[in-house]
Length: 277
Image 1 (cartoon, rainbow, N blue to C red):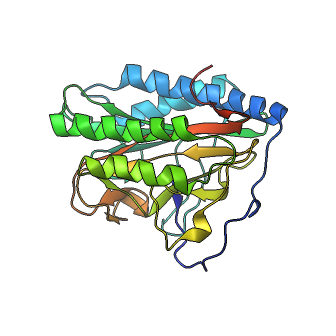
Image 2: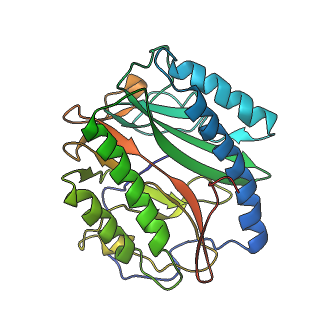
């Protein structure tokens, strides 16, 4: 689940701490267990998404998969100062121009739609969080490009993650990759640390702004991060116009895509926990 960027914070020097909780090998394996359930949910969603299916039906199936695995749906009951009520579902189902936090409902998916599905699970006290964007039948070439570029931005981050690297050294190339295709990286929402809680320090932007040096950090073994590029076909600007002020939509009504993995920083590189292994 995307983390809202704090609006007012003073710039500060890059630090090795900032409240970041490093995980042991045992804790990372426990997080992998939760992440396997998330992967199972998203795999099932890829099987089910089709014209005529409702996002409420997708959520019902996700809740069944999570319950059978003994997990807890992380998103249910989450509060947001922008919203009118706690989040009521296990999935965020964000269709077309909805960027994130879309509420499952009785709307039927149509040929040419895309749906970004975000799922978080807690199991044995630890969390996993992942998202993917799924085409409903055949979509336009520009939408296929949107999906491909957003996935590539996540893949690039995974390729570059290793101990000792500053996050800014990864976020800037992610932004460059997206903008080279004349797409835009969302600024209002970023990735996050994750562990026993779904949202932990640090905030993990998918872009780099040299004026926000307070958001930079050094990658260290034992960090676990939810990396989640969110990319729009048009403007990067968004509105909070969804039902109950949950769903976040693009300002110009153009499509948006969202991909996410929970990733541990380990000696020599990184370990993707939500890839199903």
